[in-house]
Length: 139
View 1 (cartoon, rainbow, N blue to C red):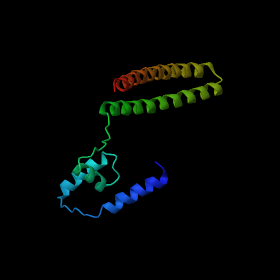
View 2 (view 1 turned 90 degrees about the horizontal axis):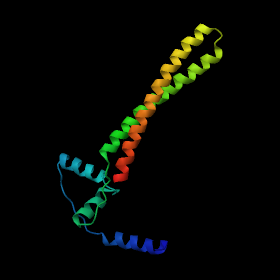
View 3 (view 1 turned 45 degrees about the vertical axis):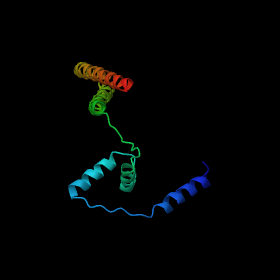
View 4 (view 1 turned 120 degrees about the vertical axis):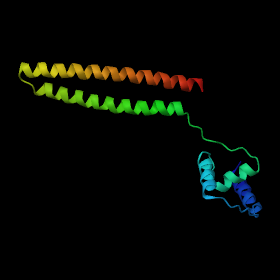
């Protein structure tokens, strides 16, 4: 459809809508209506109401709660991974500044602990990524 045709259709739609429908709602009913509108692709409450009243399809946004839980866990793991990475970077900087063997042994023990923690986090992330993949592949 060309822009000109589209403009004509929009003008026609607007010019035909000359009748008003007024309704009264309680505050609770109004909040319920607003929540329903927000879960759809409708931009305005009037658009949503018109579609419902005229039995036209309303596109509802659906969120997958199990995927939301996976995303929360992945976010937590990412923060922990970032912290572990920062600790590892600081340890490497200390290595370059060391001049005594005793300091080196202490750093090496800290490095091994950080490395083990990092490997655990990477394994957890892999598990959650696998779960997320299965969820989306089944959809």
